[in-house]
Image (tube, rainbow, N blue to C red; front, side, top):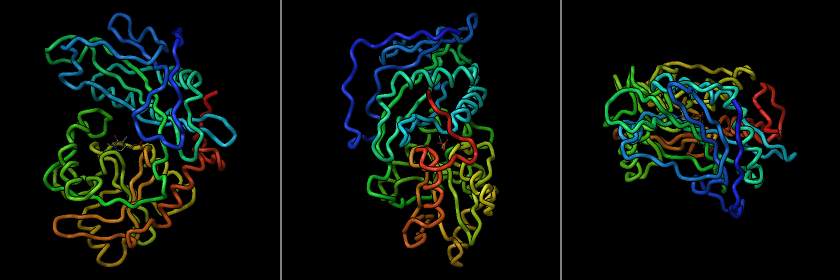
Amino acid sequence: MELSITPSEQLKAKPDDAKLGFGTLFTDHMFNMDYSIDGGWHAPRIEPYGSIEMDPATMFLHYGQGVFEGLKAYRADSGQIQLFRPQENFKRLNRSCRRLCIPEVDEDFALESLKQLIALEKDWVPGASETSLYIRPTIIAMDPFLGVRAAHTYRYFIILSPVGAYYPEGFNPVKILVTSDYVRAVRGGVGEAKTPGNYAASLLAGEKAHAAGYTQVLWLDGVEQKYLEEVGAMNIFFVIDDEIITPELNGSILPGITRKSVIALAKHWNEKVTERKISIDEIMDAHAAGRLKEVFGAGTAAVISPVGEIKYGDRVISINDNQTGPVAQKYYTAITNIQYGRAEDPLGWIVPVE
Ligand SMILES: *Cc1c(COP(=O)(O)O)cnc(C)c1O
């Protein structure tokens, strides 16, 4: 497929790297590609960033048939712009597509066109410490039709957004609330797909958690409400004695690439890491016995997010005196050092853009 490039005639002013937030600014260009039954995926193009015109009957708007990804480009100290395991994101995009009845994209072509988009936008990759260019590939159903079925036409697009350091003042352990009132996903549902509806389904519990002074919800399984699943935009890890434990993938947990990277590094370092079912009662008991050393989340946005407090029913536990523990710190440093080219890349995770 021939990728066409239409440069923007008016470039935006670049923001101050030191003042970047998350997800409010977008670069000058975007990638677009369309799907039809006769033409398959066609007309891949990089063009000026702009609105997508939609009929009010567009299927995505009514039935949520869509998928997305989230990854980042990093500016290494050498000046090189690099991606972290992007092939994993396109593999997961296609897994999400299969679950949502969306035609898959060619993973090699998707990576190649992403690299071209970032190469064109390279001046937008910020250089200040721990900043990055957030990348959002998305596919949505485009037929103007109100009947319920899989769409026949789709739009795949990628937008880019320069983002600031997640921890400008250093690690800040978060407080999370275990909810028994709501579930995020159930067995056989779409929990393991990166699809917008999962986020819509989690908002109410999230708002109630915020109102109670908690940053995030820690979700229990949707069947027995007994086993820990994830935090909604992050996977979750527990350190009990000297073992690192994370819930095993069960169909309702999103298979995070940061999660996979923590597990791979732990194995590479010969540390004890286990994927298994783990119940909230086991965590509470381990805490009571003084064996719960650390809890942390893992996801692209924050990489590692230490958890300082968990509330479950009437019980509130404080973890590692509400301080970042050595395990969370070690994985955060190791992964970010690879991402920013400050350390060796022992497992071959880095893909340079040019
Ligand atoms: C994206 C996401 C994660 C984290 O995945 P990463 O690939 O590590 O960024 C975890 N949970 C949910 C629900 C997600 O959407």
